[in-house]
Length: 229
Image 1 (cartoon, one colour):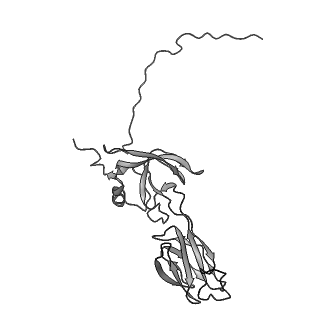
Image 2: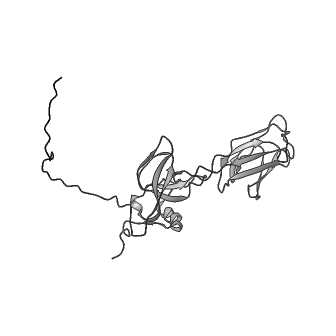
């Protein structure tokens, strides 16, 4: 079989000239030392500059049974509990004080507002208990467990209840978590141009400034983005 021979010289590149213009996105808005970290990022495709929160709580679940031990007498039901304002990780204890009323104790032992069968309960948790064919009796109850979250970072939404409503970081680079959790870089401290931040509509820039300032994440307006000379 015949082979073709290709001649290659010492320098295969022809002389040329080119220029590249770098246009910064102006996210960084000051000389305060940047503190960065790599974190687990979840939920969607997010862009550099997105304001992030951390999922500190998981999805609560209820198990029927007398808090003192044994099965309930009543056979009513409870809707899947939802996290409410101020929810904590741990076991909430719901104890019936009568057929249609109950008390609720938080994981730290705090006695919360009492509730009634057939009425939506709203507080650190949200749920509704419904009566069944056999009435509940005093001492029946449920244990509602709120697990710790996976601590993944997601776009902060002010109305969230799982801890991600607290803005704690700024995404440092574009990242695609639409297929699952990925590792991504974030800023944990620095000065940032508010016009370059990406945040959920539940937030205002003024509210973000107040919320992130204690973490030494400072948001500047376009007027104050440049340090004074």
